[in-house]
Length: 511
Ligand SMILES: *[C@@H]1O[C@H](CO)[C@@H](O)[C@H](O)[C@H]1NC(C)=O
Ligand SMILES: *[C@@H]1O[C@H](CO)[C@@H](O)[C@H](O)[C@H]1NC(C)=O
Ligand SMILES: *[C@@H]1O[C@H](CO)[C@@H](O)[C@H](O)[C@H]1NC(C)=O
Ligand SMILES: *[C@@H]1O[C@H](CO)[C@@H](O)[C@H](O)[C@H]1NC(C)=O
Image (cartoon, rainbow, N blue to C red; front, side, top):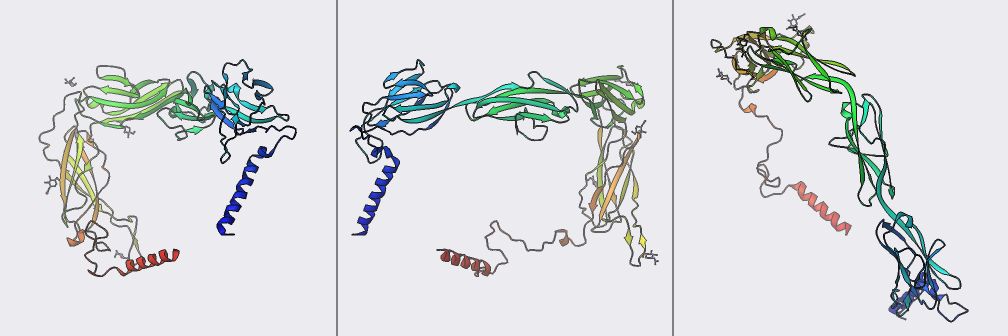
């Protein structure tokens, strides 16, 4: 016997065995009758159907003969043979077309049976549906119907807006039904949740220590993948004591100008805001007007005069408390800003320049500079004595040019402060050395605050050293694979050749 014959023989045995195991009924002949007993072509299954849709439960049999096919649900008979028993108008019988069996390789079996159609399914329709054939020992298959129900939120802890006092713990709840059981997720409109997360799953959302940042609109949304998610909104209002912040703690102005002092106030319920100069409460006069828009509370001082300079405060209060913001109105210049390059063009001198905003003309500046030491505190000499480095500031008084023509006050209501520029050449510096500088400006109202520190470095001796020396020679050209000017033309890099060889060997060995 050839190999082909053996294989054919074994395959045949295997196929016959397989068919017999899969369809035992085929050999199960009723001893008392010559009639072949029907068997089910369609196996019992689970159907997952959304509410409102139509389902067809199949029951297809071979050799229907004269046996009666019955559809049952529990003990209730829905259909018997071709007759519909149940009065439910949603139920319909669909005869399975007779003809060829769907069994592979077994043609010619007479088929039959009835499928059960159920329209507009409802959650109550869930359960087992039995297709039974009235043989002596009844045979049956069971279909299980699961009804998928879209999510529906049926409980929300707070219907109207929820009012709480600052510091409270708030629990928002949403309960939802549906099949499968929906997931409830919490989000917040135009914001992240107080925890910082964008979304949190759970039936409830707990907000600890509610404050003004937790106020807003929250949303719970139930989703189970069936139909559209369902969602509800809860508005949370938090009542809290005022929080006050001066928009600018120091307001620079000038004689004859209109000055605006602004406090940003957060409070719920809305606060009452009063203005004070030192300890005197300010009423609305020709000179003063209190205004508010949203969170901004403004004291307008018209036509500023000398007596208006000084310390002001805004006091905000509501039923939960009181808070105060401090502001200073001054005619002195604002902080100076340096604008010269941090790397100087010269070795021994440096042209330092800066500008200030001042309404009144600046009459003089005091410029401070000193060499910068990284470790300023102490310096240990070779002989062991610890000495303070010379960290005293050098100072120069720079008389402002053009003060013979004092700047004219800008007409109200513009806070007409002017930018005034100045420069000074510092001489006697060391090359390639970093210095630090500060400057202060004086006008008719006095000295302003000293500016923050500015660093500058003088030029090195050798112009070549101006460029950062790099450890590796630069590679020119766009492509990394391009031939570098340092490579030996005509010979390849031995290391890359070796890598190619090793790779080749690995590829060959792996085959
Ligand atoms: C501002 O006040 C000064 C002095 O009180 C007065 O001379 C001037 O007319 C006032 N200007 C305006 C615009 O009210
Ligand atoms: C304003 O208050 C500051 C401190 O907040 C104080 O140093 C300054 O002397 C006060 N100015 C006046 C005019 O009271
Ligand atoms: C210093 O710099 C300023 C502005 O950057 C310039 O107006 C001025 O002429 C310079 N002074 C000298 C001496 O170069
Ligand atoms: C140590 O050296 C410093 C700087 O050279 C000098 O000023 C100081 O007098 C020396 N001290 C002693 C004890 O020699």
